[in-house]
Image 1 (cartoon, rainbow, N blue to C red):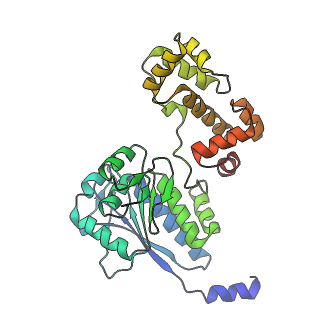
Image 2 (image 1 turned 120 degrees about the vertical axis):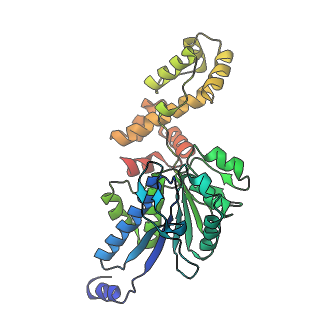
Image 3 (image 1 turned 90 degrees about the horizontal axis):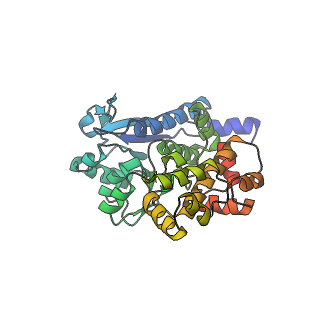
Amino acid sequence: MHGLDAIAALANTEPMVRTVVIVGFAGVQALDVVGPFDVFTGASLSVGARGLGDGYDVRVVAVDGAPVSTGTGLTLAADPLPGPDEAVDTVVLPGGWGADTARRDQVLIDWITAAAARARRVVSVCNGAVLAAQAGLLDGCVATTHWAYAPQLAAEFPSVTVDPDPIFVRSSEKVWTAAGVTAGIDLALALVEDDHGTETAQIVARHLVMYLRRPGGQTQFAAPVWMPRARRTPIRDVQEAVEAEPGGAHSIAELARLAAMSPRHFTRVFTEEVGEAPGAYVERVRTEAARRQLEETDDTVTVIAARCGFGSAETLRRNFVRRLGVSPDQYRRTFA
């Protein structure tokens, strides 16, 4: 559509304002609130500037409309929870250390249950998933949350299938769940893209100096420095040797020799100390090394695969898809 036709179409388009309410409570994670808030308000500015409507009316709400103190001491103004006659498009349930206390507030949970019934969608961020679960919104669903809270969510809500790996997942027709903190921004960008198209989401992402966008199925990445460190010095030495040269042979026999243990004893001790078998650990370190090279170099996938110990581009691709949920080429397009 071009010229006068495009102008006429814009003139005949009714503005659509979607109300987004972000639930606040004492001890909420600040970025779980302000991250999605800035994405949705940024989208409103974008579509408004281009004459495409008003976008979103974004509000922080709380029981009784009381100010909300975040976990880091930042205080946010809040409106009262919308009444049953007020239209709500999207409900955002953030996390934070206060989420456990908030889920025991029956007034809040009753409101979430009622609001979810009339809203178009409900979004949880981080351990805000416990609010959705407490309201019964995740029963029989697959949900994600911050990796540190995944065991708690699984233990306390056995009817929920908890997947700690993805950045975000669509848990049901209406409910989305996101991993911790910045993943709320990723999910908000995805929802803006659904509502207003890729161009609007790209404008917002560029303004926030964000990538557009990490795929929802992508794992919550962890660099080697975040991996468990063994207590025993010989096992730590092996970890450091693997991380110093990811592309090395690193056979069980060679690693056991470095630790001055028999292969069988080394495998048992390494697994007990680190939490995964030596072979899996080597593969994880190689994946991290390849990930960084895809971001930081222009080398081909074949060259990176050989350098990082995968041998072939196809082996690297299968490993990336299995561990990260994306192919090396897709990862490079997103992050390079």
